[in-house]
Image (cartoon, rainbow, N blue to C red):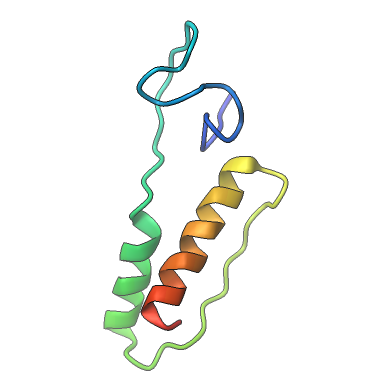
Length: 77
């Protein structure tokens, strides 16, 4: 099974202590959205709007979308 956020998907209590026998790898990187938007802003200084496609039924994607929203707000996008 692949999930982007094992905590939001309720497969683990935390990444450091999942709470039971669990193995896997996570690629959850909270700063990625902010860095990508900063790169877009650097490349396109007049950028004011960005479109995001995401699946609201996937708990991990909801968290990622919130990261994008927060980053965009901080950057004035």
